Amino acid sequence: MNEDRLTYRDAGVDVELGEGFVQAIAQIVKSTHVGQSDRILKGTGDFAGLFRLGGEYEDPVLVSGADGVGTKLLLAQEFGRHDSIGVDLVAMCVNDILTMGAEPLFFLDYIATGKINQHVLKAVVSGIALGCREAGCALLGGETAEMPNMYEPGVYDVAGFAVGVVERKNLDNRTPVKTGDAILALSSSGIHSNGYSLVRKIFESKETRDEAGQRLGVPIEDVLLEPTRIYTKGVLSVRRDEGISDIAHITGGGIPGNVNRVMPDELQAKFYPEKWVMPEIFSLIQEFGPVDSAEMYHIFNMGLGFVFLVRPERVESVLECLKTAGERPTVVGEVVRKPKGGHSVVIEGI
Image (cartoon, rainbow, N blue to C red; front, top):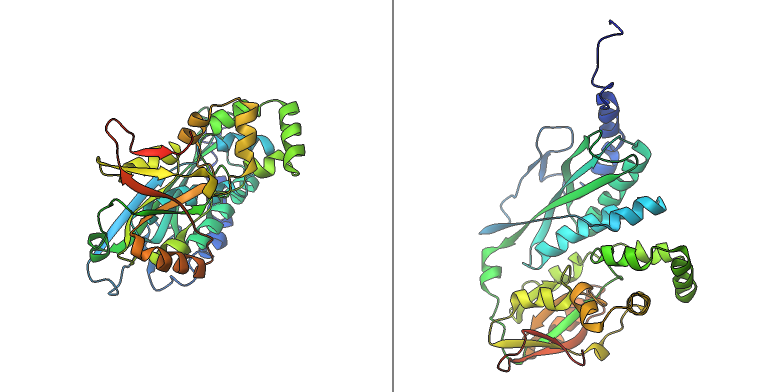
């Protein structure tokens, strides 16, 4: 070849490297197919993934969700720890579709970077695969895009897409949220994947990070990069219970912003913070900011990752099912009639 001729590699894109990366992650991807081999007709390496629903559903409704992990990615890249951010990606998507009572079926990922670093991106995909195994879904396909000049060296971005299924009758069986409903919650593993623009600002100095680490008893990066919990097992254990009025995943917008989505106009969800244990990292964020309490609850999950609104006569049954599934549920509030001019969600004492 004439050395004066330009190639795609000269422009910054190495097709062979990209193809090699696909081969390098093939076994990682296949590890998520265990138990689903009869449903997966085509997957990684093809132009599209094929997934068979089968005849076990009477009236299946597909449920989809898409999300990313925000600027938590910047901390993963700063600390050089790329093995857990994929779990966050799966969690943020799967937890959303779980609010519909959907069984997660498969997951698709999108990874974009200026230059493929196989070591780094293999760690990212390994985290995605781990998240898929925890969620019970297959990593069916995805895209890795090498885009020079779009991203600075060492920078990558991720997005995820989850698809699940639920019987139509199980959607229709939910009772409307009513006065007297109890609010049950499953704990978070910490910050999860929201509010990191503020978190990074608060912990941008080495001095603040060192002090926080001393107070927590572990390196601050361990806490800041703790992956988002995936709630598949617990939610699926109670999804057919007709006493569940609605479900909320506590993500961006905190407790008020997410529970508000499921509240009728005339009712109010009242939370009692003394009913649950708040991870210490939130106290440090509030102190080091400093950040007002109301602002904290409108940004972070404050220790609650998933919330169920349950008819009072079904509370004990739902609690028992969640405990059997390995969760430690807590009753953290109640639904009351909203006073005139009141808010749909109230944090008592805030």
